[in-house]
Length: 243
Ligand code: ADP
Ligand code: 5GP
Image (spheres, rainbow, N blue to C red):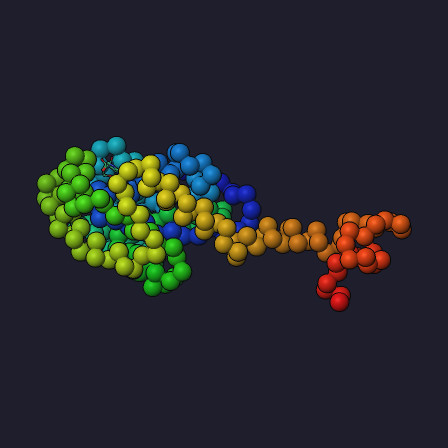
C-alpha cells in the first residue's frame, strides 16, 4: 500500500501489538483499518519478512514479504532488521527499510510482532507503546486457532504450546486488551491510538501555529473603548506578564 503524507509534520509513532496465535491480532488490525477512519487515515501496518510459506489468500508485500531462508539470513548479515525472531520454528523480522518508509510520511506504524520481537524493540526504544491482546480463555483461543483452519496440525500444536509461554509476557506491555467481543476490543484499540496523538510533544506543530498568532495581538483597542474588567485604562487589559 503506498504511504500518503499525513496532515501535519509530526513524526509517527511505533506501536507494538502482540498476542498468542489466533487471539485476533490480524482481525483487530483489519477492522481498525477499515472501520475507524480517523485512526486509519494516519496509521500504517508494518509488513514483516518471513520464511513461513503464504497461507491461502495471503499476498506477498501486503500480509508479509515471503522470503527464502537464504534471503532472511542475508538480511540478518546485512543488519537489515530492527528486530527478528524464530517464532513457531519459522523466521520473522521487521526491516529497517519498512519502518523508515512508513515513518517518513509521518504515519503511526503498527508492528504485529511476537513477544521476543517486542522485547528487542522495547530494549532499543523503551518508550514505544505496547499492547498485549488477551484471548478470553485458553479454550476459546484453541477454538479460534482450529476453526481458522489455516495452519497444519503440527503448527497448531506448536502454537498452543507456545501460547502458554507468550501469555506470561503480558507484564512487559503497557496496555492490555481483552478480545472477547470484537467491537468492544476494537474500540479500546482505537482509543489507544487516538489518545497517543494528543500527547503534548506530538501536538507541537499545532501548538506553535496557534501560538504564533499570539505574538502580535490582532485585537486593537480604540480610544474610548470600555475595558472588560478591573477598571484599568491600559490598552492591554489583564496583561499579567507586565505586572
Ligand atoms: P491472530 O492474528 O492473532 O493470529 P486472527 O486475527 O487470525 O488471529 O484470528 C483468529 C481467528 O479468530 C479468526 O478466525 C478470527 O475470525 C477469529 N476471531 C478474532 N477475534 C474474534 C472475536 N473477538 N470473537 C470471535 N472470533 C474472533
Ligand atoms: P503468523 O504466522 O500467524 O502470521 O504469525 C506468527 C507470529 O509471528 C505472531 O505472533 C506474529 O505476531 C509474529 N510476527 C509476525 N511478524 C513478525 C515480525 O516481524 N517479528 C517478530 N518478532 N514476530 C513477528
